[in-house]
Image (cartoon, rainbow, N blue to C red; front, side, top):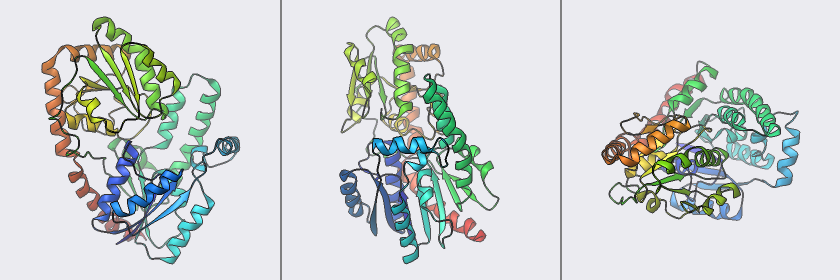
Length: 405
């Protein structure tokens, strides 16, 4: 069948979770279908990477939708959003020219399925189209905004975030109801979204996967007492988690295990995080070509997330390599982990300290978490397993959704 895939960003290079998910879903779809890709592009590099993807994934065609993310436009849209719909985070990624281009594509060619990747791309799908429509909800955006607002101490930012949350709480359900089918990454998100939908709509859980050939456990040689945090640091929940951990948890760990080190890996660290490297026990790497050597040298990964939504690819990657993980419950949402067996959970500072110090001192516990984590990923989250679920998911859309057309 013919699929028009609308991507929130060009899914290359594979340097963060959203891109990894989109790339592999595209790769899976091109195995059995004719797929054309239209993607939002921010820079010239994005356009060049879009052209690379055509050959890499055997795409029928690729289409560029330029998007303006200048500071001036952001300010103007933020001011407009004070009294207008849609929410700022949706209007920021709107392009009238892009919408017209998608409409021309749909009017000029017969596509069987239009795939909107992220809620931001739903606005590009016409309300009336012959094709079936699928919305892939990587996250629940209203949940992200609520959690973001709850973490803000500066009142103007908190007020604006709460306004955005109220608007998104209307916009997101209304938008989901326009699609024939919804895909989510976790059962948590499914429970949140399902009550919004109409009886004839189909919703399915399809997770993110791991390249288990790339992330392997055999190469680990951990340094003694090394903690690693991984994640794009321009994303506010990642930066918030790192700063909270450093200020509230890390000093107490160092009191009990003085030679502990903290390695912070991720692109675009803000100045507050870059300054942490001034201390002798903290390394801030910024963006790295290959995360595996850093993970292989780490005793464990810490995931102190207090905001966000969806699945964390970094946890799956760590488990695949046999790296023990200590995470908040929010951080490992949607991953079928068992606390104490393949992961340790900590939702407050004292528990984080206790779990990490215990793990640093207990090599038997490290080995158990490592072995069980590798087994879990290979059984449930290898891309080879997920690819089969994606193809079955496409078949389900045509089985259930086409009946209501």
